[in-house]
Length: 534
Image (cartoon, rainbow, N blue to C red; front, top):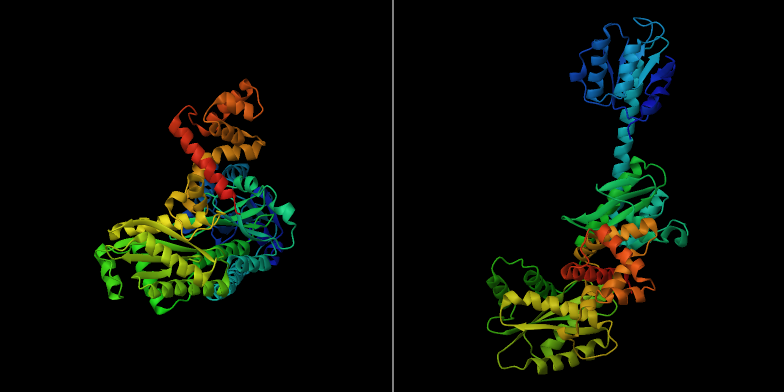
């Protein structure tokens, strides 16, 4: 929020000296951090950059080479400009060697045609700089207050984006790593205008830094994530170059979104919280020694030693948000725990996330798993109705393998939601590749994989309006049978072969390699899963 050199030159204290820009007029948008008055030529080591240097020129050398060194030293120090008062040494113009050196070094030079009070200029600029900094601090404190309140209130992404839109007056969009819109506040703009072809337009905006502005689109983009795990981008559509306020606003909003994702938790009973902590420790491998999990479970009355361990997941059909969703999840966990108590089953029961309840079943030796699962499923569905599906992971007698059992159950449960067949419980054989990829469509690692494998091709199609991605889909879908793929694509063989050559060039990939094609095929299936928000 520092004033630019152009703004400084418009201050009354400088206007009274009749400033005249004689070189570097195209660089007047450079910010001015301070004003330095100097009549010596060896001052570069005293500067920190961003200064407007004021001088009468009285001590400047006459030798052209020395003048050039003086200007180059100022440029190396990063000055914003040099203002020279006429009358003491120079009476009408500056030497040509002086101006040529300034032009080459891209240092703006301003002549002051009238005698200037340097102290007034210094005071005026410094007051402006300090006032801007104070105002920036006030704005920062105001935004801090707003977003702290949102964090404390547990605001969701929609509420946060609504506040960003209100404070900025601009549309704002939250997207994932594959450029799919997660939430938005269009601020009165037409959705059809703003969101049409969003993916291809977003792909054209690269964000190497955490926050960037793309002049061609007018987008101000910042990355959203925490703990080294980026999961999206927040985009403020500002049009022209963004102000410092807008940059500060979008970065604070991104931090609040990331913090909200980290802190999201649900109200549970003390028993459920304890069970959840143990289950989470097993899944996240938080225990340095597996024995610790056995000890903790035993301490809450659930012995795991010498038992057949099975991870179960109750997957809610309707997650939702807010307090009602939290209450529904807590009721599901408590209902599952009561059903297990009625059957005298040794279990740990706790929520895994917003829509899943985990059950670690520890069966004594000799107890039949299928019979137990059938009885448990009957009790659970009697209590919960059709509100959730029961998914079952693989059995193990090793606490180290329980994590895998839970991951399998989670996958099976998510796939089971999309199946028309209603069963008491579901197991891993129900899962196939498309279903597996669909489960991980929101996972940043899968989105990163899609971008790594197909990003250049998708970018190429978006820029040129080509259909190379569809041609690749035909080729892989036909089992790499080029004749069949050309037929399905309604192209002649030579035309289709040319498409394959271009695909190979864009991706720098060998389409004759089985392993390469397998990787690309998985990436295409993953892309379909990511784009399928149904």
